[in-house]
Image 1 (tube, helix red, strand yellow):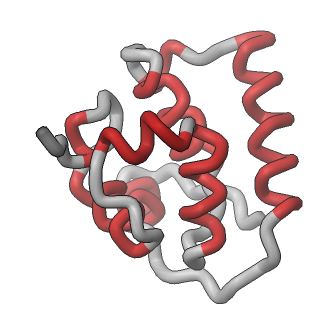
Image 2 (tube, rainbow, N blue to C red):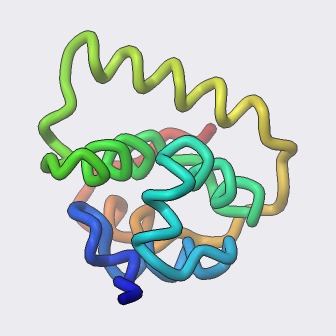
Length: 112
């Protein structure tokens, strides 16, 4: 059985669309790749790096809510995120639904 990406906790339709652009069409593919490889594929497809999206993916694969990440664990994930981001050659970004949402609720994502 193939489950949609959005069946992973913390991931919704916008993230599912982003993964589809990266050639990832199921939750099983993400689980098989793991968070870092799946997120790298997103970046390689032109998705703009976003730390919250990355750690929401990591937490979701662990079955945890995205806001469960804090302290030293969050610091370690930030280091992993920064390494992933640095390892991917820059490609022209396309708009992220999450950025529009964050702007709408008054949270401005830092420009990386």
